[in-house]
Amino acid sequence: MPVHIPEGLMVSVSGMRGRVGSPLTPELLAGTAAAFGAFMSDGSRGPVCLGRDSRTSGPMLSRAVIAGLQSVGVDVIDLGVVPTPTLLLSVQYHGAVGAIGVTASHNPAEWNALKLVSEEGIFLDADRSMAFRTYLTTQDPPRAAWDALGTLGEDRDAWPRHLERILELPNVDAAAIGSRGLKVAVDCVHGAGGPVVSELLERLGCEFVGIGMEPDGLFPRDPEPTAANLSDLGALVRQSGAVAGLAIDPDADRLSLVDETGRPLGEDLTLALAAAAVLKRTPGPVVTNLSTSQVVEDVAEAYGASLFRAPVGEVNVARRMQKEGAVVGGEGNGGVILPALQHTRDAPLAVALVLQHLADEGVTLSEAAGRWPGYTIVKEKVTFPRESLQEGYSALEADLDAEAKDESDGLRLAWPGRKVWLHVRPSGTEPVVRLIAEAPDERRAGELVSRAAELLAGVA
Image (cartoon, rainbow, N blue to C red; front, side, top):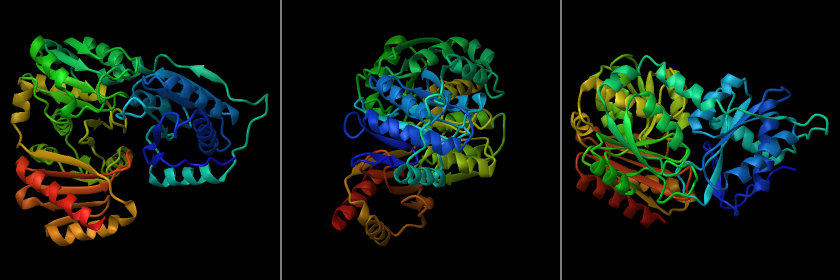
């Protein structure tokens, strides 16, 4: 039968996510997986790769996904607990028709989700996602007979392959990094990243201390690696004398930085420093999203590179990178994409590139950050009826008198002469509207967000 999308389930180009038990159930995921397998295979016999993060609901929901895929005659290759970028990198290796990640990324432990991946090893883009959603809700996928069910295999070498690919990159010089004798502190929040980041740092010749390295899914804090959540990592940096703190989200596609004094630097600086490491060796365009800090523009300009912006969402950035022939890109949430490896956000890759930048420049993390203009980003989430968004955008545009605007993803108003911008958009992962402003000082950014929230409240 076609799948009914229950109320409260967040559906977007990122996939579908919700709270485990209601609305996210094994029955829902089995039906969705069956539809995905039938939709992606379209008569071919390629497998679907499956991976998950460390959430306690992961084993149960993964079994439901496996059952759904096998029921439509699709073979499954189960990678187990791996970073999301490791899963995506496995698609082309196995000649898979797609992949499913059972992970809710940065959401709290009571959430889980499906991330849906195409045969290209990138997430479904808007057109493909909409086509699948139509298929999911209108079609009854043909089930396989008893003697044509899909098989189940395992791949426990996906991360070792991923690691070797990172170390082989021309942008990563493990010997140069190792020669610096860097000591770093790591917080993997009990997600999938603990074992893999540990092995990566060992191969890069770094000494490290860690918290949250056991991938048991028992997150001790809000797992999103924002500055407000990194006090324990900051304390570990100071106590251990580390030169940097590395915070990884549960599915290891985002990296946030803490400097040697224990001060969180903000997720946007991850992409800026990683881009500097890449552009030093490989000139070319840079792509990021509409909500990413201007510091990435500053880095691109310093290396003579063009910068392009795309709507928020990893696949949107990836598609624009393909179009522009970008050499590096990503999102201001700590997600770094290197096309020489693959077109997806990759925290282990980001770790290597940031450490490469420190080795290249012979600086501390605070010194590396201090080389670029300082900006403050202020973010707020507000509840706002989505059916009134257009009216809300009109009120903002009329009141704020911007020098430039972009309507490709919500509304982005900018004042380039003052290095100020505001981005208002509905979240793809939570039932809220996001207000994001950046300015050279916190007061101006905060005032802009407050004014935007006030104007939206007047419309609602």
